[in-house]
Amino acid sequence: MKNYMPALIASLITGLLLFIYFNNNPTQTTAVQTTVPIPSSQPPSPAYSLSLGEEPLGPGVYESGSLSKITVNNGTNTDVLIKLVEMENGQNKLVRNFYIPCGSTYKAEQLPEGVFKVIYAYGVDWNSGKKCFNRNRSFSMADTPLEIRWTEKEIEGPNGKQIQKIYGGHTIDLKGSVNGNFPAHPINEKQFNE
Image (cartoon, rainbow, N blue to C red; front, side, top):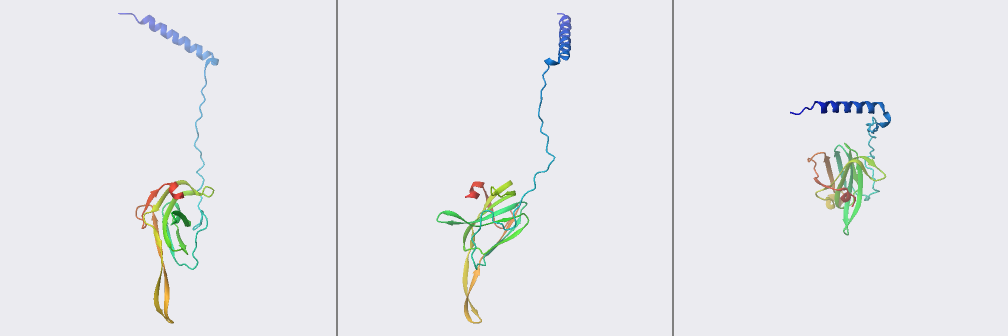
């Protein structure tokens, strides 16, 4: 059997000498500096909302004398921007846009006749410069178009026969689940902006 004792003693002495050398010569040591991010104690900036019914994409088309309207109940936990878009000569034409803060109800009145795509942008913290939400953005489009039609009906009045106009109206309930009354499917931001 080999005797490992002399090799063990030599290793211990070498280790001890290296330890003494490096502890007595500070110029030979290397300092490592690391930067550790410290979490901010400040809460995120408060979310900015527009006023109920504001039109951030520009003024819409209002039909003077029209009694057609849609009522939108925003039962989601985010604000929503709704666009009513009409197809005209193969092009999308923005007819109306309106902003509804979460938990609010808005009535869009004096709507023109037509068949409209209803397109939604949901989110938090409206950015007026970019005309979009800063956080929690999502987009969807109603599965079926919204049709606004006026009809005329002849009625017997105190002065004889009269024509009565009947204006269309709709109510849309937006909910944070699949229980809304106007089903929609997800779209992307580019599709929303078209």
